[in-house]
Image (cartoon, rainbow, N blue to C red; front, side):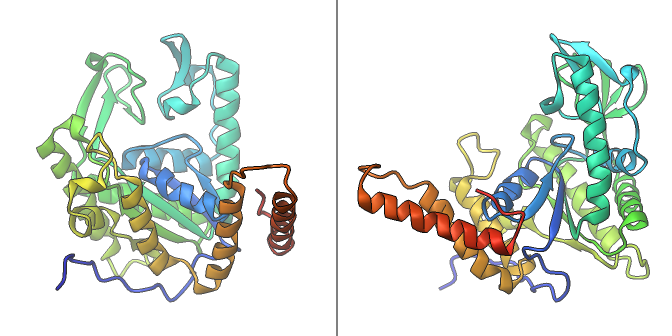
Length: 321
């Protein structure tokens, strides 16, 4: 008896992720869920240098600014609720010091410029097709920073607008890094503040636009662009509210772990599995709480753990615990 409808997936045949890979993750907060798994298993990765970016236009603007090495000056930031903010970045970067915020923005632009060029894989998660446009500047913002909503107009990006934004993202990346695999996904997180129907419409626009772009076989720019169905997994394979957190909006840890395992099936090289097992054993060892931390048995356990860590570090210089 089948108790679940599973989405058929094929393992990628080229450019699989291993411990030599360098991964850049951009987009919705689901990026950070997958990023935590990559962190746990000690893969080289960089996550959201400008914080969470929910919609395609914010990601497109960030990539454009990074590749063109935009310099942020005083006019790009503003003071609100006792902090300095930037409309291009998440409130995670907001700061009580204007100078510190500008330093962080410019430093992250420079580091992302280098990261885009050296990445073997770029994972982009789209969260919503709803955007907010500043009434004063007519610019679409990445984050409203709790400024009164009357200062913005709310718009739904069309399928064509999103598809063009995706094409722009890919073309810019391809201009400086033609070899990286670009993996798109739609976040399974429900944006219910927009409304139930509006959230479904938003996700439909994102999915339609992604497939409109990826299915253009004649384009050389998208030959290394892929779609991973994390949204569909949440909707169909995990069709049950027990796979959500208490807010009934975000996937639970079980759901995240499940989708990570499915991602592993498709994108993680089998030669990385042994190292992942070794890393997992060390991580569990580090989380171990002994009854007697001064006992001889525990000291031997720590010595063995240190030897395992050194053995991994000798193979992969980037791994540290």
